[in-house]
Amino acid sequence: AQRVTQPEKLLSVFKGAPVELKCNYSYSGSPELFWYVQYSRQRLQLLLRHISRESIKGFTADLNKGETSFHLKKPFAQEEDSAMYYCALSRNYGGSQGNLIFGKGTKLSVKP
Amino acid sequence: EAQVTQNPRYLITVTGKKLTVTCSQNMNHEYMSWYRQDPGLGLRQIYYSMNVEVTDKGDVPEGYKVSRKEKRNFPLILESPSPNQTSLYFCASSPAPGTGYNSPLHFGNGTRLTVT
Image (cartoon, rainbow over all chains, first blue to last red; front, top):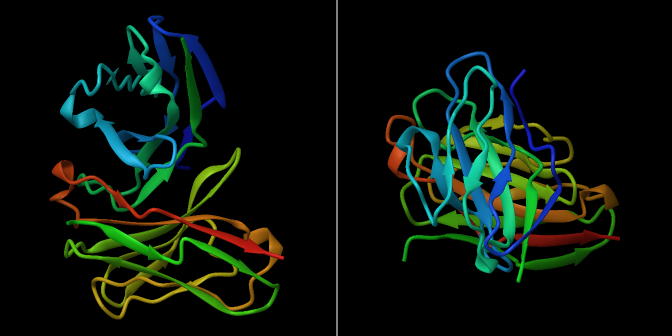
């Protein structure tokens, strides 16, 4: 079965500390994974996708097929990173994000 | 401006009174979806549509209907709302497979529905 698991509902860190938001997935084929972010009072928006191997706002995420994980990392958290973060898996091969399974989300709180 | 527009933003209704939440996108996207967001449960897909007249159930379709008569519109219909449908609803759209790597899922602002 296709599934996305985010084990932490809430993650609280101090400014400048490293942060890692965990995401594990279950998928029989070759997975296509994404991180979405929802800042307070804003729409959900794409943060990054594994296929691009990019760094956005200092965040990176590496797909580890052996551990079926796609953890989101940032070496030095900033207060403006406080938001709700969702890991998502595409149900369809081919890159479209039109049919995504989302995890339950992790609320990141960065304290001054 | 490219966007997904949902209406209304807030809706309070009573059990059993039919309602429709509208969703419209101006990006000529093929894919459209409806999600509900509940505390501790994250985003769960209700229905999705790959193109006009093509719709399919998501993970939590019970109690909901959709239609896709035009490419730009994807209304969510609750024929007989119940209190367990109190939630925050999001509509989203994206291009068809094969073109998606450069185009993320575009979300609407959300509709907060309360059923009493």
